[in-house]
Length: 546
Ligand SMILES: Cc1cc2nc3c(=O)[nH]c(=O)nc-3n(C[C@H](O)[C@H](O)[C@H](O)COP(=O)(O)OP(=O)(O)OC[C@H]3O[C@@H](n4cnc5c(N)ncnc54)[C@H](O)[C@@H]3O)c2cc1C
Image 1 (tube, rainbow, N blue to C red):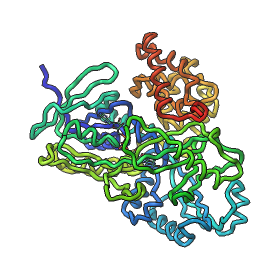
Image 2: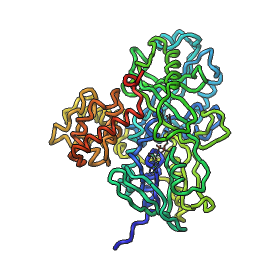
Image 3: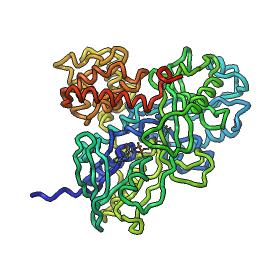
Image 4: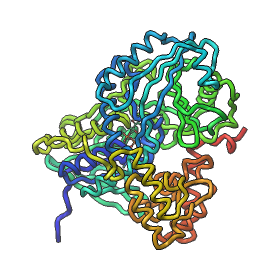
């Protein structure tokens, strides 16, 4: 009998940090396994503002190192994942009532440019002529307006897809990725290995996994994971909740993102174009509740709608404008002294457990941002290699295109040419072809190839949305989709549209059932699970009780 495999590294958590670390480990030749209790990128790494940004506001807290790190990683992502990360223009209107005056904003902009001296995007601009600002932006509040700064950051349309691509790229380099598999406890810890118990939440199968080192990348659940493997550690996480509203684009509304100072509390307030919608956010509130049950509160909705109505007075927003809301929690370091949630550092900490804390073969990731995941992964694997008594090798991920960026030289040209070619060759509408190239990058070829001999697979799943039947097949066969939610939310974009995909559940279940062996009972259960999830997490204005 062959002895059970001992991995070099076990990673708990398949968010941006866990998947980023898995890729870094696989690229540096470590035998790595990632264990995720639900699906890749299903948690905090989806429910955020979807920006790859330097973090202009961190300058106020003198976090120059973090801003520089973020701006450097932003530039890397523009090269390594250009299909998912794209430049976005931000406008910062200056008002007389703002706490931060024009001089401070100008200084911040100059510093932001300085810290991104090696960027490929243009520097900021200032405009102090309110008449021209209002002419170009007639939807904007005119009261007290006396200037506007314009600068560039980036948007990550689908952070969940970035997590998927990191996991898939890691897998293509030998990593083992286990989804719907929860760490449930510690079996054994010796001076050489750590063995954990896991349970497959779909099949119920229990397994033991042994490794030489373990990384706890449980995001907001870091303390919970620690409770399962090491009860001697103090609280590490101090999470804060942030909520967003998704609204339809309003008539003659902005094409660029707007970044304002909220009147109520001086916090950053965003209106961001996102596909056919605007994201309105966000809040930042200490959170001590159930991490599996995070929803927006009435007070948060009121706060966001009030700010929106003030800054964009031409529309007159009400709750009826909200298509849905979503909330996430920022996995931040526990800082009992912090008075305000926004004061807690956004820097990450790589916490190495010591023998005194129960284990010397383990570290926990505390904090971090989407933007800086790669650098965090690089630092983590440096530690892991050291702790495994291996030479610390140079990070290969700095200049490493993800799967969808392979063979892409100049994204805007590639995007247009590829979309047109696919539309012609596979008889797709140009909108559908563009969606596929944006969603999968150069991997879109593998999805469209499925339609070559089966043109019925090129059909849109729902006439209003660009996702096609082949994506369901591809998601199950090539991207480890195992549940209806996996397909709705992360192998297609159906579940992130206005109706959260509820209008196409039957169709998707019909397509998935034969491939996932779902009998009639299981099909009903999958639909119920998805509907329950929607009800629990997405407050839809129109479905909400009065
Ligand atoms: C409102 C908001 C806005 C934000 N906006 C931005 C932004 O615009 N730009 C930016 O750069 N950052 C942003 N962030 C921060 C960023 O989203 C997070 O820092 C990042 O996603 C955290 O990733 P993670 O991998 O640590 O956690 P997660 O994505 O939460 O992943 C942790 C994973 O661990 C899994 N897990 C937990 N327990 C177990 C277990 N027992 N067994 C197996 N798996 C387990 C969970 O299922 C989960 O998938 C924002 C965050 C919030 C909340």
